[in-house]
View 1 (spheres, helix red, strand yellow):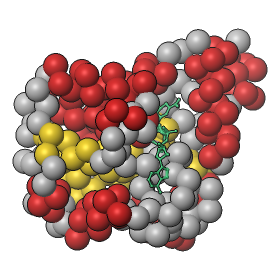
View 2 (cartoon, rainbow, N blue to C red; view 1 turned 45 degrees about the vertical axis):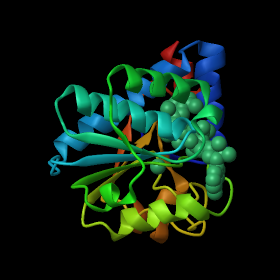
View 3 (cartoon, helix red, strand yellow; view 1 turned 90 degrees about the vertical axis):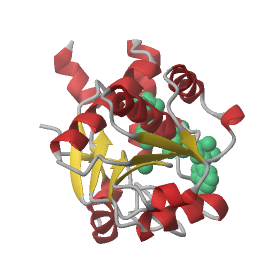
View 4 (tube, rainbow, N blue to C red; view 1 turned 135 degrees about the horizontal axis):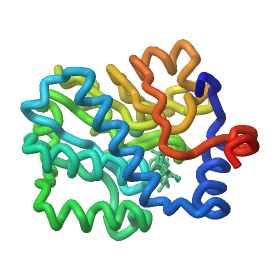
Length: 216
Ligand SMILES: NC(=O)C1=CN([C@@H]2O[C@H](COP(=O)(O)OP(=O)(O)OC[C@H]3O[C@@H](n4cnc5c(N)ncnc54)[C@H](O)[C@@H]3O)[C@@H](O)[C@H]2O)[C@@H](O)CC1
Ligand SMILES: [K+]
């Protein structure tokens, strides 16, 4: 089951269909994505002494902020390093930021905290990556790759084009990647494999049309 790999356009189409036609709220899918990532992260037996989630303000970042909350509630020392303008966050990520605030999850602006983490969660970009990475985003990815910490990527290692596997300027080298619904074709290329590490495909309730036919 779920051995196929999909394109970015397919991922976006299946997501939109699940939300708009089937009616599963986007925030529910995000919570399932976060829970799947959290469970894989615990099962992979990483050193959880100091976890830093590096998140941007798209929905990939929202997944990461939700993972930070799940870790925090477990009593794990976790901080969020937020990239980008929170005022421009997606509706789901805005909600995740609000929930994180309720739980007093610490946010850091110090890249040294990323470098000194024991585990880094990469929630910068997923299938929404659309151009080469520069500036603060590139600095954060370079810090992640320079750290001794193990790195877990959400959906796609940030900087990898999920269609072609190409590095868009710079890309996270992850030890494992929890990718949502189906693998992405770019992760099956040599470069994609080198950056994603062990790939876990998570069933979060999003299926291709053909699967829907016999689910009805
Ligand atoms: N839509 C859905 O149904 C779901 C989405 N999920 C997550 O959401 C991700 C996709 O979310 P989004 O579509 O919000 O996209 P992303 O979060 O991947 O990133 C898109 C954002 O990054 C910006 N961006 C793109 N390239 C950039 C660059 N080089 N430098 C700076 N900014 C750049 C875009 O302008 C946009 O604001 C998935 O990969 C997955 O992790 C999950 O929460 C599950 C459900
Ligand atoms: K990512």
